Image (cartoon, rainbow, N blue to C red; front, side, top):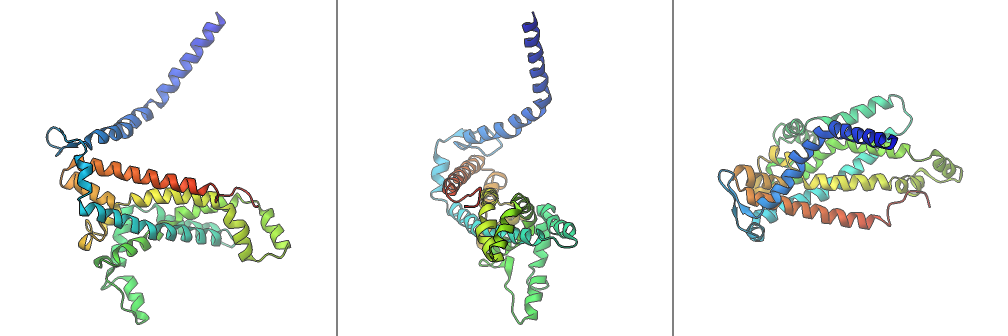
Length: 299
């Protein structure tokens, strides 16, 4: 009888637990798992949103092989990732090292550098459009004081992606905070012992700080890689839908145009799955390559 009561009690607790998390489970199924499964099937159809989907098999995927804008958007996204990812990591690390020092007003400086990262993406892009203005923007004004004629930035096919990559530093505050957490987890005795042994600050950075920050760097690299490959807002707002000659036609922007501008939902779904495969493959190789490089202790 007592065993039956325990079973009933455990069953009741389980039911109550599932009831409490049911809003999250429903949201997960309706807004995440459901759409993912739906896009997989839609990618094999021709669907103009208004009407019934028509099954066309692998035609959408075959279409990509002949689509010049597919290759252009992929090239733009990879170029941006190669520029913005290391730039953001280095900037975040430098800020974290500076703000890790025991200086007066440390918390104030940390807040100042972190706040830009929580500014809405559209608002940030709008501010930087003004900063990059070739006639009265701050960048070209400062360059003119040194006798340098600034480029046209967002109106140039050569400079628009570097300009957007530079803008990505605006959000380096979040990277800085994570690096600060990593620095605080390094035992101070390592630096103290190195100082006693006569190691310089540069030697301590290369032999102690950087190796023990490798797990943090690995995490930021993977998340930054995935985020860069999914860049959309900067290209949409700053590039005006693709920029000059599609120089800022990011992959996600092109996917959006296919789906919500031209209503090619089948092709847009196929593009989304190709991007998912690209992200998975790149992440897999990064994780595999990191096994021999990520250190969790000083050798």
